[in-house]
Image (cartoon, rainbow, N blue to C red; front, top):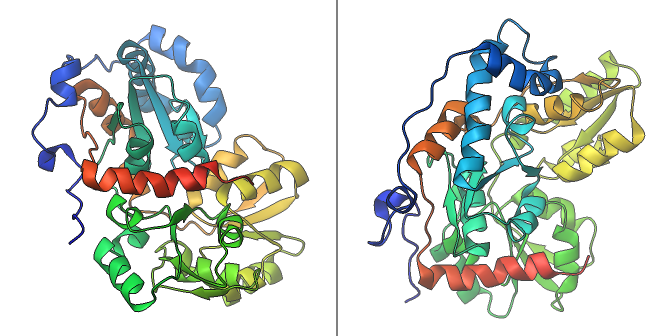
Length: 359
């Protein structure tokens, strides 16, 4: 029987020296809003002032200041997904991007410690690609509905029932699932991954809508799994048509985790990085992003001339990551993300095949 993944937070990890033991627990820094803190964070507030008014900045600034000082002291780098809030995305993150960007950039990190500001599968992916580094997630309960929709045992059963059919697995999955996978994909490279395989029939799991959308772009037969993103599945075609009627000239950009009926009424569909590039390159006068709400705020900070209409669907898991939790993670060196080596070696191959695939 194939090994089952261990829970990948410190509490259930194999016996070994913890990150807190290796790097030491520091005294919690003073969080007073002093003139020095105000001065040293003024340029950062300028990036997010349209979302965080001056009267509120004294609440955020001490955390931003402490995190930026402490990460240098620790030799740490902060990776943040596009769905993180502006004060994280623009004020403390060193590397930002979608799942594919973060997976690739994680392999280039010149730091002993990675703080993953995203959900748990992203931290696991960083650990898979950086087995010798310490990977921390500020809240180990930051999960994902897609990741929760499937297990490694499910994939093994699919492979038994459909022998020889290659399995393409979305990165929004646990290491246990990746270990049973031929190659991983993200929303930005799923078509390239599917087309790279010789088989005429391919499993594309677990996101059913992503699979249905890619099936419209390939001659291959795509087999699906009924997993959905709880943010993107809430959007409907009728909702978007109503926005078009009430906002003439608006451009609607959809994420491929949405239902195909939703994508059909969008002006453009792409990964989070693709959506960002679309807005930056085309500069539509008014746009609606059919994805997690914080991404619109993060882009708007860089393109203030674009008017964003925001149907604010928030990811409750991404929002578990906050400045206080990031600071606490740096102070206490928790939660450390670990993956059972028997699982990690096989899961890493699937991720590396994706990362190394020529686009």
